[in-house]
Amino acid sequence: CRTDDHVIKGVMVTKFPVILGHEAAGIVESIGEGVTTVKPGDKVIPLFLPQCRECNACLNPDGNLCIKIDITGRGVLDDGTTRFSCKGKPVYNFFNTSTFTEYTVVNEFSVAKIDDAAPLEKVCLIGCAFSTGYGAAIKIGKVTPGSTCAVFGLGGVGLSVIMGCKSAGASRIIGIDLNKDKFEKAKAVGATDCISPKDSTKPISEVLSEMTGNTVGYSFEVIGRLETMVDALASCHMNYGTSVVVGAPPSAKMLTYDPMLLFTGRTWKGC
Ligand code: NAD
Ligand code: ZN
Image (cartoon, rainbow, N blue to C red; front, side, top):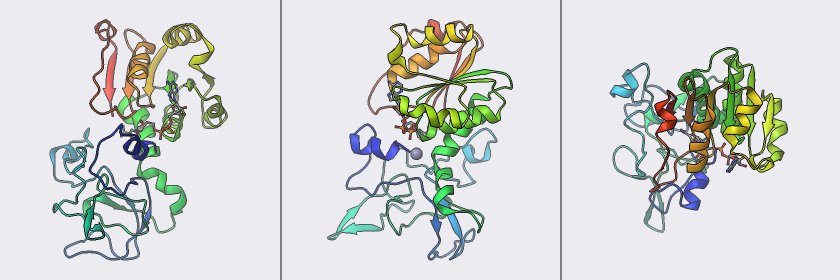
């Protein structure tokens, strides 16, 4: 997913020097003292969003943001150390994982055992993009059968949102991207229509309203831009619509929006 690139571009802040990579699958090489849930040889998916199974987010059926997540970019393992170094100087971890490596060290709560038969080169996507997008539609948006959905951004995460909307039974799924090369894949995974904001001088919310007879029940921002977060909000139905922000917010940026968008009844959620 794009998140590693956000660090390179400075959109997301973490400690440098760093080994990026947070979406992966691998095999346990060895375990530390007291580790019980995995053993050498197990296939696993590293978890940038860990599961300590003890904090109040892990214990709440509606929660998933474990307190052990390194959302502030501390860049170290739970014991405050990093196990990477270069010429005697520390090299930091990214999101408790650092998977652009052949070997990495993670906390036990940052890894999940998977089926022995799972093909690693495919299930790595469950480490971020697929779970994020699919969950955004099913668990956060709670898309209903027969509904109309609009998905802004057709990268790996946006495509996974489309799959979630389809599996929830949405009858119309509109993909929105500046890059028309993304349309073919989006349609292959379930988009019924695809549009580019470049093709109209009208605001995209108006284009979507006209296309659908003003029935967009769910919209998803899967890009990570402030303007498209507000565009997506304005694109869902003014009364019963739900808009989910999936894209990572650019660090140190504030968002301005017209509160009237919420006053009429829209729901705005993050995930
Ligand atoms: P991506 O870069 O592959 O896809 C983004 C798409 O948006 C591209 O196809 C691009 O052409 C399109 N786009 C860019 N600007 C646009 C605009 N103004 N209007 C319309 N389309 C535009 O990214 P991705 O890997 O799919 O990730 C999407 C976002 O989700 C990123 O910001 C990523 O950091 C974030 N993310 C968040 C979570 C989470 O936990 N909430 C998890 C994973 C990824
Ligand atoms: Zn990611």
